[in-house]
Image (cartoon, rainbow, N blue to C red):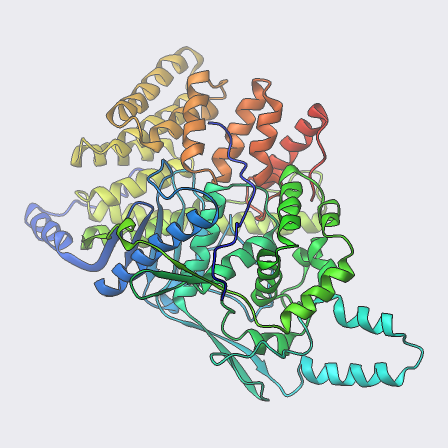
Length: 612
């Protein structure tokens, strides 16, 4: 353990500032019964603090403890990264904790804007993250998961013994070559010094690692924090490792926080999978690895990041490396700051065999807010999963262009058709719900958003009007109605378009006046120009910029802002805003357009070309 907090430094690139199906409506006496049932308390609770909103179908005590710990983790990260812990303008992340893995998996929450590794297939975790433009959402399970890492007596340790024997027998292999062979990997074929009292013994047969649900939660929040408050084009291995460093977050007593301990099963994983070539990480080759065959694991990502974080000599190089990647340098150019990679690999090898530092930090518990808890009604709880599914269902891959090969075209068309089928099935279910629960505002608002985001403006207007009739004060109904009106106006006769667009924007502006700080009207007002094909006004761009400031890690709105600023000749700022989407850690649907924009802006500004 170290006695003080090291000055962790990262680069900040934050820019300146459906019509329902025709089924009979229930009789009036049924409405009374239905409404009463929907208003009854559910098994779901919501806990909120300054920076997080957590939903859980577990016990209240567990929910309060985890929510409080997330706020403590936010406090810790703020201190480590030199950012004062205080209220801010960022939209709070919504985190949903679901009862079991099977229930979680049944939702098929395909991650479209967040990926890991790619790690070996054995290291699949049940976690969903979507940096949506109106606020990020995350979902994971409340139960620990189990990863089986060995079912055979043949492992990396036994292979290492054989390789060592061959090397010693081969007199033509010099000492320097043997050292290079042993040192140029992340990890070590010997795990001396890595085994601790909570690790797994090295034995033959099946090895399994329990992955605590809490560690998945803390790792996911740490990644979210970094990309929200310090958005940049990070390499994926770094974000994976950063999350793993804080996966071990723990509290002791009333005033001590701890992070940085070795993940559970570290020694067993390295013993089974062996080392991973350092060069393949620093040149981004690991990103194309086959998950069925790769030896790249979360433990390897943790080891590399942990070493660079905790090394007084290497940490400044890490800062320079991240700055170069964030500015658009290719992987090899950025990695040059580490010098001779063989030397770095030897240092890593020595580090892996040594005891690992970790941090314990004292703090004043009075600075951490107590979570405010409320129990959701059955009506509110009924649409928790539907809102999670929204991000995975409305994103439809494009159809193939005319110039792609027949093989690629077939794959693209299949992906497109499959996504459309899933979306339409999901929409049909939402329409049924909205028809069955005509007085439930959550049902109507979810349907309105789903219809709008699926390009169905008239059904969106109908659902939004039903929501407004239930609660005229809910600004979301005005937002979706206004945006749907703008989408519909885009296809209207020329002599009607202007008037209909004015009416659409008036509805959105009314929602903005109702709550000038709400992000939804700002986004919808800008989108009213995008869907109509008009050049956005300066006021619309200013509103979008404010929205990006509140949700900095949303690729959709970042790309829109970059394009709008480029259209006004602000190429350098636009390029900076688009880089995290174009060359950042995740392959989002917005990446191709962002890469094309950055390439064009790079040619115009003369900046270094982006990697990948």
